[in-house]
Length: 191
Image (cartoon, rainbow, N blue to C red; front, side):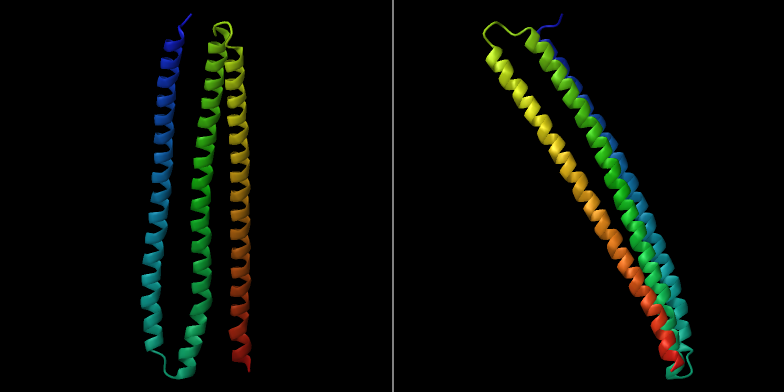
């Protein structure tokens, strides 16, 4: 059987190792997300520059104002659709990163709570006589901390779900506006 200081020392070492593992995992996930974001932005810039050059050539070659107007309006819809696709991809990267961070943190926190409670149970078994009130106090504090973590976790999940719902709503509204813009130039051109 271990003495109490040895148990705390082992628990502290395990906690530090777990925190380093969590930090390593989160750093890796952050790096992957940044890498995806950089790739998305590089592709968007490259595509935008190529399309801008082609569009500029077409606009400069317009023979009259009507052709210039028609070319301008014909490029509005694809640009809006590409912006929408970019926004969706960006939201997907952010959502995936958040989900991975949350899962890694929840797993680590749950494991730490389990270890702390196991250590406390072991230490409280060997507590000297007359310390029952102190042991009860610590058990209550641990239970309250666990309940607080659960509440925080639930609130965070609800906030993320609300954010994702709002983002999806915004994307839907932008899609509808894009569709309306797509049909509007045709109506003007028919007149």
